[in-house]
Length: 422
Ligand code: DCP
Ligand code: MG
Image 1 (cartoon, rainbow, N blue to C red):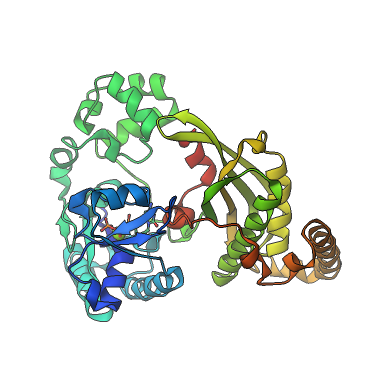
Image 2 (cartoon, rainbow, N blue to C red):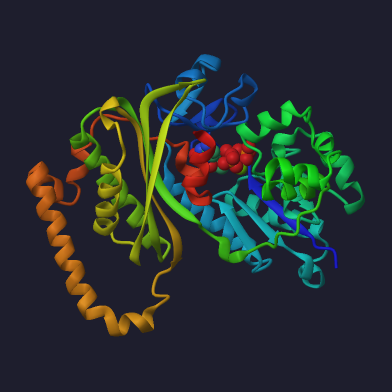
């Protein structure tokens, strides 16, 4: 049976919330992000977009394009609370929801027709309820698969609703740039352009064999997507793959002693967010961007990962792994431009509760011993202040938040992302 998939994405999510909460911002170009030398745009209101302001753009560049914009620092906890409200609405229509980020989800409504009507009816009702309960607008795309639904939701933003009937899929996707395909990043796009491929339709002219011999397994996916075929299920368990914090510094940090407190603070934040979602993570990843320029505005990037013997949401355990990983990054004296800590391999806390029953006592003793050890080490390195909760913030060197990470942290494997960046 043909599936009906809705992709729902809130419009200018952070900025729309700010405009809703502060009426004086309505109708004005608003940029949410860090307002400093190295601040990054998280998002911009639709009034700022005609000036070319985009997510992940350096704030300085954004303000050159749109000097009259009002810059608002992000209130992430608040956005999370609004996100929860929106997902509660979605869940009242179907349990088959795959959250992609705070403001974005796929819904499989194939089986919901009896109860709620056609996919279009459902999308309309969802949009209306979101608007009446949060005073925010969402855009929806409807199609037989996730790939096409996602492209469709982006077509008529803001407040859009676009349905692509199965027989119109190819006419819809073929004129679009090939970069609309998931997984076609800068590197793949360059290769494709070299092959004379600009649009998805250009790509569809290559045989499966030709694409596989050029791109390996990825080639098969390119072939299928270019023909509008995407069988991936809407997976409610895909909720969060990794979760992390990263920051771009105001000034490059050349001393480990300046980076360590940042990692500690990030480990604490990651642990807090894991606990907030009742999750634990098996793998800790540290991401370090050095001040070494590679050209085209790119910098040398290192990621180092370690899988723990048992999953954790404990700040000290995360920090301990992060420190070891950081110490393995070469040539740090060149200066660290960005540092980040991620947890991945996530699973619900207490999944192995039965097991824990038997191992908890020695494990706890062990944990306490390790914790004591870490605290001792920290104290000897930085003095007592660092180990007191809350002390880290005042010890952090001046730097900007990197709101560019806010969204990606929840959906991407940081390691995969780095491969692209490198
Ligand atoms: N975000 C971020 N950094 C990025 C991209 C996004 O912090 N590089 C945050 C801010 C956005 C939110 O995630 O408000 C949702 O991202 P979207 O890509 O859906 O962008 P918007 O919802 O802001 O705008 P649009 O109307 O284009 O969906
Ligand atoms: Mg959005």
